[in-house]
Length: 130
Image (cartoon, rainbow, N blue to C red):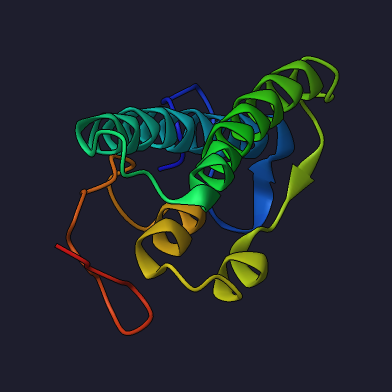
């Protein structure tokens, strides 16, 4: 099921739009936390490098910008959810079929547990770096 359990079914062809948007907002929140964590780790690596920092090190600040955008998109969706009528429904199944990350697509379809499993590739197209 998508996001937090409510009284109605959120998956399949008649998922409430508000619940789907809430789920996407929660995914963005998780992504923002990951981005913040990575930003901190990269900053620590750069600081430990001492005075031998490359001249393009300031481009790393783009990570901060990406993180801020993700946080703002999550805030935006949280506000949009409050304006969506409960009777508005959507079938997100076909939209989820277009995603590269199969685990995320499955969660959006309501096919599996909604807690992401970090560092575990689910299928071709998913990536594991470490």
